[in-house]
Length: 151
Length: 151
DNA sequence: AGGAAAAGCGTGCGCTGCGCACGCTAATCT
DNA sequence: AGATTAGCGTGCGCAGCGCACGCTTTTCCT
Figure 1 (tube, chains in turn blue, cyan, green, red):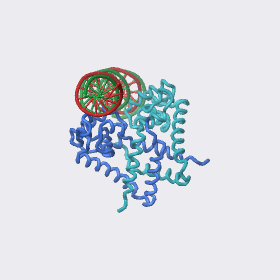
Figure 2 (cartoon, chains in turn blue, green, cyan, orange; figure 1 turned 90 degrees about the vertical axis):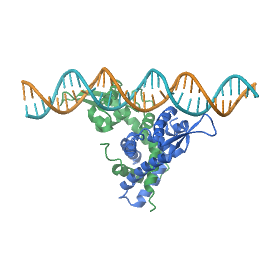
Figure 3 (cartoon, each protein chain N blue to C red; figure 1 turned 45 degrees about the vertical axis):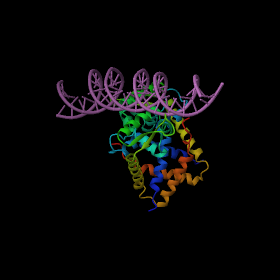
Figure 4 (cartoon, each protein chain N blue to C red; figure 1 turned 30 degrees about the vertical axis):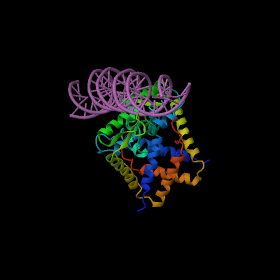
């Protein structure tokens, strides 16, 4: 009955979440990338990079926000030239959101920043440990208790 | 140059954060625990369990919120009997926040829920893998790129 | 084929939560 | 002792969120 592993992980996870709230992490990652991209708009940018060109409603579902909220955040990003609205050629009502090249660049930069931070903090780890950890983390996240959607 | 480990971890981490935003996770964890405890008030409760009885200002620093915000959330928790205000015997101006027994119970329940969820998702793992993962995760979080405080 | 229902978008509006500024009391410094 | 500082609660303005509405286009049903 020495299985306190669940508690250990819960503790570490709690600490991780406390440290890297979306707000905190994204604020830090997007520092100095222009006024339009901050902790609120970045999820839209990043989500769009993940899904590829799509509608605001779809993107909203992806990142867990209301359609209208996405629209407004997208407004800011569009005005800054990071994002572009295109009429859907297949559907006259629909408006597609598409990253511009500049938008893709921003996402690249932030992702690079995050990966670099992680790698530098892994610098002292034996490489095989780091790789094992990466695999396990991936598996944990995929199978984990947070897999189910909000509803 | 095969070191894409940083990117792998960054991806998994991104997914994890997307799934377990404070709002989502805490909403789920606090389900059915009464009207006073939700994703907003729970961090106060949980933080107070961590720090022990302390002032609202201190607690605010701990959980990254403004003093006044903590005060207001604490109001709700106090009204529900989960938390109690005590005049600081050593300082006439100060007001200490202290969990009631009922408050401690709530925290226990949510922590148990989280640990149980994690353990069940680890059920298929070899025990030594799970323990190794717990150790590595703990180390990663402690040394990690998110250690530094916001300012 | 054509009218009704549904889907998609943007915007007006009310609600909520946050943090700053103020006023007050108590402690600390000179 | 008088002045400054620290701590608390509350009033207030601001920002973001999501619902509801009006509009256009598509889809469905007869």
